[in-house]
Amino acid sequence: MTNLNVIEATRFYINRMIDDAGQCVKGLVMDKETASIVSMVYAQSEILQKEVFLFERIDVAGQKSLKHLTAICFLRPTEDNIQALIHELQEPKYGSYFIYFTNFVELNDIKSIAEADEYECVRVIQEFYADYVAINPHLYSLNIPITYENNFLWNDQLLRRTAQGLVSLLLSLRKKSATIRYQQSSNMTKILAERLSNTLRRQLDFASSNVNAPDHTIVLIVDRREDAITPLLNQWTYQAMVHELIGIKNNRVNLSQVPGITKELEEVVMNAEYDEFYADNLYSNFGEIATNIKRLMEHFQEKHKSQSKIESITDMKSFVESYPQFKKLSGTVSKHVTIVSELSRLVGIYNLLELSETEQNLVCQSNHSEIVQKIKQLIQDDKIRDEDIVRLICLYALRYEHHGNNETNALLRETLKYRQLSGKYIQFIQAILNYGGRKYRQADLFNTQNSMAITRQFIRGLKGVDNVYAQHIPLIRDLLEQLLRGKLKDSLYPSVGLKDRIQSNNHHTTSQQTQFQQGQLIKYRSSLFIIPSEIIVYVVGGITYEESYHIHMMNKQGARIVLGGSYVHNFASFVDEVLAGGVPSTSNEFFAAKRH
Image (cartoon, rainbow, N blue to C red; front, side, top):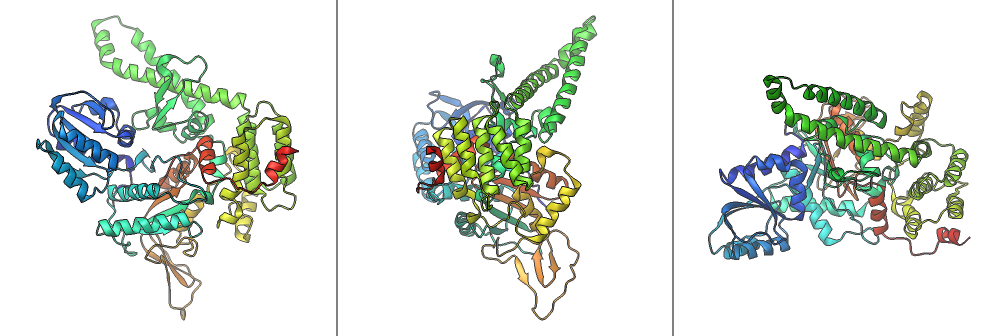
């Protein structure tokens, strides 16, 4: 069974490219997207050790003549990159070229490259399928911040890019077959599923999974609109908090706005592959991080004391040998102390603990009158940011959309009485129900529509919760648990080409559930279901680090799941994504509320 690790899959291809070029001085030529792909899985210091001494962009003019270097060109097969490569080969500045495309390249493009290679510098042209950004071992993104267009339709270019990314992902994970399932209520997921299936069958000898195979893979395509709740919530695990409150872009964190920040810490890299503290604390909650950062500081102080005691030649030798590790530890301490201090400062000045508890209670509890009064109280709290009040109103609008005493308009009027909300936030509040309201969902996000869900919520309420800031469970976890139990309805999540639910003979009925293993069929009542051994998830419209945390926890319990989407959202980027889908054109109660 193949290893479902997207970081290892990407590194494998990069290692192959470098090794194929042989023992020589090399330059790595990339485009804007492949530069991100490489930087996410390789530190520059590590790649330098492999005799790669120059890094260039194909779309940026570089040095004139480098005949003593071998060029490794790692590019997406776009029209612009093909033309730039042709121009490069017509007047080659490198001695030789090893060309690797991240995806399928058209035969006409290969012919054009061959015709441009008059000096016969090209040694290799290959397709290495690393056309996505690997973030964590189980997490990937296509780095497309805006997927939706007006009326939530596909842009042809983005549809093609998304299908290419998923094809690349499947091939990099060595998948020769898979069952593709999609969200029935979303036209965008259906179109993508069909495009992915057609592309795989046209370009490859790719087939639907054999349901009896031990490594049966399911590709599950879901629409972000099905769960608009998760991106609206504040977060309390380390990676998610940093992204929500500061922002992470391609493993880089901009700290230039932190009061008193030093020049060398204005931008830091947070890569779990090279940062042991970060790797150990990706999913730690804020309280645990504070404790662990204290331990890290104590460890550093002990090291610092030992480094300062140089009384003999042996001490000098020991100092020189251990200095690189000491310097690395010093950098790690400075970086994480700065980040954790800034998170703590933001939590305090914006009253995020009280705010987050209110968010969680709003989404997971059902005391309507109490939550309305709490929101009104927070609206008048000067410490609460405008964006956090907008979160609360949107969460309330989604949670109590059909409540008999819905007070969304009253809350907006109350907000505008005390705050000057930006036009963008007003539009976002107006757009949220058009984006993820009950009319556009097939899932019961709040467990209010069936007796089993209500009973589960009631029992959970009796037991209480371990952490009031982590009551919410994202929808994607519930869907995946259903899928792993063979209970995800094919009427809601049908497959392309192959039905994942096989009806048994209508004349033979039984209420007995049989034992099952992953990759096999189980019988439950009168139906047979496929239990996948591996699941690859793609969320149209983006994912969150909260969802990544839950997939990580499921994988720790034995599941084999890879999660990805068009983008990794925080609240700011999610606002832009929602507004891209369009704001209802009719002048409704929201704008009427503003005029009052």
